[in-house]
Image: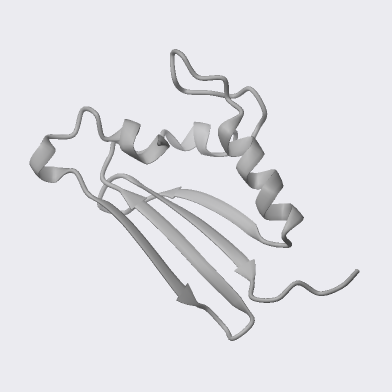
Length: 101
């Protein structure tokens, strides 16, 4: 939803949402979601996973915090960055198999 909402001011003909998956090194898989929205101001990127931090008028600021917790519990990690040609890229990397603790 974040990606879709970020493209609200992008002309419809330029809106693109791409979802890609790949095996990265034999032990992990990667999911990337890329949008053609406005991107994010660099000073806000470091705070996106903080609980209750939001850039939306009606946002709660919990979505990305919850996502990062879930991904971490599966021994993975999630990153968000501005795409070089506009928009953002969210990347989730997860192990193919969980190791026992």
